[in-house]
Image (cartoon, rainbow, N blue to C red; front, side):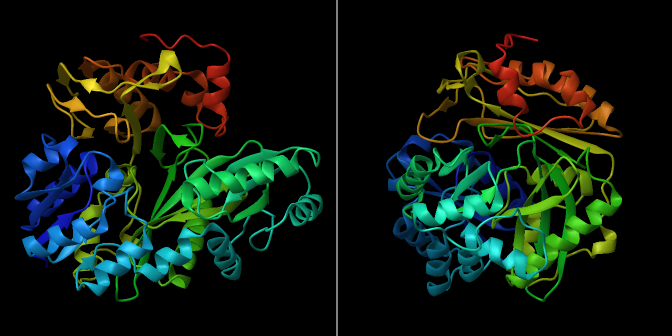
Length: 455
């Protein structure tokens, strides 16, 4: 096992990894920007090094500075967390070339699965269903029109290197396709430095269901069941739960087998997530793979009792998975709400600033992953998430009631947060039913002018 690792990240995920390392007897090196000098991950680490100014490009995306901090501190490995450099194949390759263990998949797997068109093609080769669409990257408007005509409107144009809803355009008619195609290409170039796009048939009312996989370097691959991430706003996840209300045992087995087949074909190691769309008939289709630990990994941890971060660390050190597929069962029900520093009444406007009061909930079945504390100032430079509130109950209804209780206890003052929004959402009849909403539910609900004040 490693003696010391560096965490190339910040915020709650850095704190989460530090806690796992300390329980395993591993010393931790933190890196931080000037804006994060007083951050919790800096306080909890055994060593900490400033790697640049506040903007991410000058700090958390600064590969030479991160490698230098690793070498100066004699850290043996780097955990990238999620976001920033976590799915950067070049960074993983630089770590490998510098004789530093990258706690994640090989750079070749990141490259292959990071390009959505390539990942889609691999899924097809594995016999995993994919949404009807182009076989490869679409280069011209004429080719786009031909593809759309063949698969039928509406279609969706997606950036091959994309994520987070960027570089995506839904097209309902042939007339609007040329402008949407050029706009998607331009946005893909601006956001991901790659203009490549592909086209799929647009599923109008999908569920978003993803499968967690874990693979060691000895050939063992297991899935840890599914998470339902359908509750989104503008393609950004807000609430996640496990199991999914629309997945039964047989479907779970088929989705799990499909996810493991894709991971095996990509020669994947470490934690990863295969994301699927589920249509109104219950058919599922491969969408993409995230080659890192997910924000919502803790949902699966509470559902299965398996510590995903500790498994990542052990696998990177050459150890086998601590479990077999037959050991994995989903117990009870787990729900997570992402608590962001945003004002929902003002179109979710970011609300950076100083937290004057911070009182997290507790009690049975409640977990809070956060790097916030009273008097902490949230900088405007990074993601707005303050905390992840995760609850576990014996049934879905008991988990919903526990979440409402925990949201009622959670007190954050000095800034606007999405806690009132979540209290309204979690008790909404459509969410309580669990089976009759799609990824468009929140946007449609908000479009009706719903009062988002205190529940």
